[in-house]
Image (cartoon, rainbow, N blue to C red; front, top):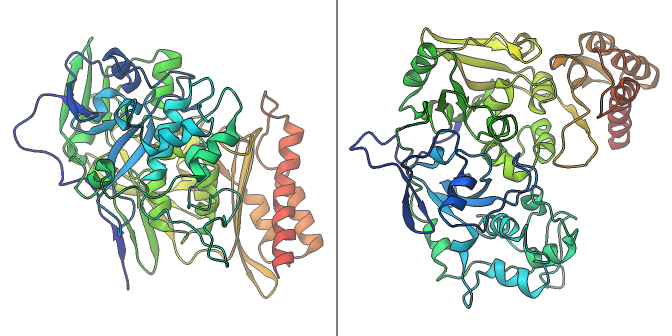
Length: 504
């Protein structure tokens, strides 16, 4: 049996020494957090301190005008211990960055000494009206410093060959900008600026900073305006808090809670941050299963798996944007129990189970039994999702179909994940997960039964597709009609069959 794992990446573990005053290192200077409420966003806090480069455009993580950089644990085991990661400052509570390092657009360069990203944006006309530019610059800088970004070389030795339409010849991944919206619609010069970037200079202090460990997570307790923000030292401390305070709200990347705070005025009396708990930040594989820590960000999971789970690999680029994936977690996505959450259909098709831990211990629950109703689950108020367990071996024929109004960075109208074992032309096993067609994510049981034991061929597949179109209880809303949703369910299976037949 072989096992691989990703370390917790906490930068030295939870700080249990003498408590330092709450504060964040911003552009090299420590700024105190005294008086900051648990609901104060990093964006509002920074702008209140005079750092007005980051802008508020949407307050829900859609536009990227507020992007900043955070020094985070590395996502590559063969790279430096620290990576600069871009996140939406409008969603992250300022208290969540206690003890951490942040860079804003002001900290990247200054007039007369522009950062390479700022220089390329300026000389190639990428700044335009300028409102979104600081956010673009921060997202581009994160990709500029990403370990593993390498130039591709054409057969004639020239560095002008892009491997695909979404990567530049310098290895720049355009998905790094998928969460940044330009109001002037001038994406071409922004892309040109991104593709013109070379490698960081040897004297670049921000590149050199990556060689040192990231800041350790700090045990944080902040109180203001009758509310508390707590970063517990351990899983046990976290679940004890949840048991004592049933109205507490759990945050990891705050990509969902941040929207509730900004747009709906949510003011939970207790916010418990679990994103840096070591017990939630491991990823391991044995011969029988892959165990994914519920506190790892989607970007961390994507890079740690490195394509080992093809169905998840299809999901990642379609899950919101890179800015969101840099903070969002599987635990958070499943914890919200949204019927249109993108992760659930894929994990249902993978026959995944969840590990739930509370004060009384841990238990395993099949994901298919986890959802009980609209945004309700079997998870008790004092339990946390600690791991997502995917059994091995994986199915050989898989596909994830997400129907939305935009190709990327959008909410799905319907999502379908299919995992089939096809042996000698016959479906030996079928697992199909659906989202957006009922009050909960669900398994398409009747379609699975129709496929199992049937030839993976025209007529049986057409019949199964017809059954799939009748699964769930699709409704008409502003995203799609019930008829459209049913048609997309059918087409998803027919499309997979056509694709697999063509590959054969």
